[in-house]
Length: 218
Length: 310
Image (cartoon, rainbow over all chains, first blue to last red; front, top):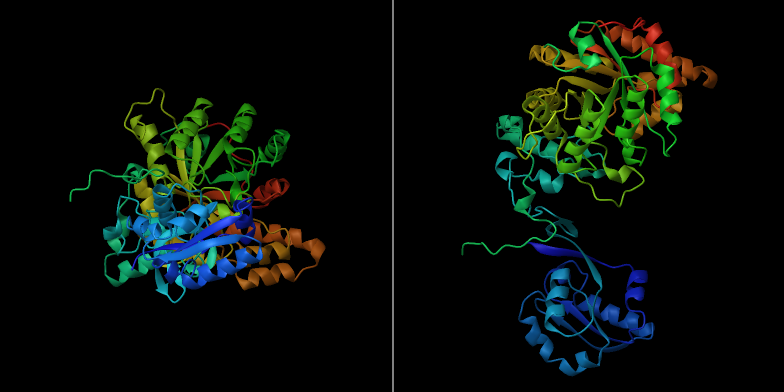
């Protein structure tokens, strides 16, 4: 399943973000950050303990089922008084959750996590991006492996000259996307697909930054 | 193939003579002498001088400005351009800037990933890839059009080059990749530094089997080792580099003070052997921060004097 992949912010940065904010309400999420163990029940409990030791008053905490859902508002309504007492909401969800909550509550929000990418758990504790939502899919010509996402240079016309034993030049632990594509196309007897000169990408397909659409035909 | 641009390098290659090019890395500062002094050392021994574009992703004086310094000295520069740092607007704009100084050679490269350099936290751009940059320059030159389709007044007249690495893996992809660059419109190739001659000759044979040597001018890339340490470093640390054990052993087998000479010997022997390799149309000598050795290498390889009047 696709998840929003996050990691906890460095403690020092969090301390700076919370400077001068004495009373904190902590919000975790039962979905993606529970899987990545960055903002589920145990992490919220640990954060609560840590901040208490640093002299913060924790006015309350909750792990909402799906922070990015509009129903989060209702889940938080139950905690109205405790939220009102807080100087800020410390939100241990991905940035989707942070923004959903910020839109709904008239409170200063502080993200406890950095949102890295939208991806999936490919093996235990290992998360991969898989798709950058570029808006101009070429998977049909690359054997179903995405070079836009998996190649560190996002090359669409074949590998650079830095492949070392099938690994990426920037990380010996990472497979070279184009070696994977080559092997896959070779297996499928479709190497001719690599001959096609891919045109410069249409970045209007993604409008980055600032992606949005109102044209979906539903 | 026949000359399509005012490039001197192209004319020499077109005449059937072996070409010799070299390169200078710009300084990490704004002193123009850092470029002009290096160029002075090699100018009589090479046909064109590449200026590297923030190589290894370390911020330096720009390739374009350095090329202009060479041009003002009356020399023939080759503008190296990586797609790592600039989007298609900036790339096309710099191509026009170079063309306004009548810079007639361009080398289209992907560029090392920025994680290797001094700005590892910076954004990588890669709006175009090297293949698309080749197509872009050809479109600008041959059709007088921008990528966006508009007409260019006084289009650039550039001889279009790219790199090829016969040693990166998978090996079987490397000749098809050369073919793809030719299909994109590349006219000359500079190869990765060659130390594994057997492998290079195999790559060259596969290229010949497809007739590619008649569609593109291939300049064999060579880099003299200054020391055994450098040989080991290149073998173990530089991505896509193939330095056979016997070459490292040969460097390590001579005393430290004789290692520079041994490095030059290996380089000269490489050139002499590859002069006989069908399809090699010249040499690109990358003497990294050792430009003063280029004249000796060129002379000892029997590539001097360089053609004068064309």
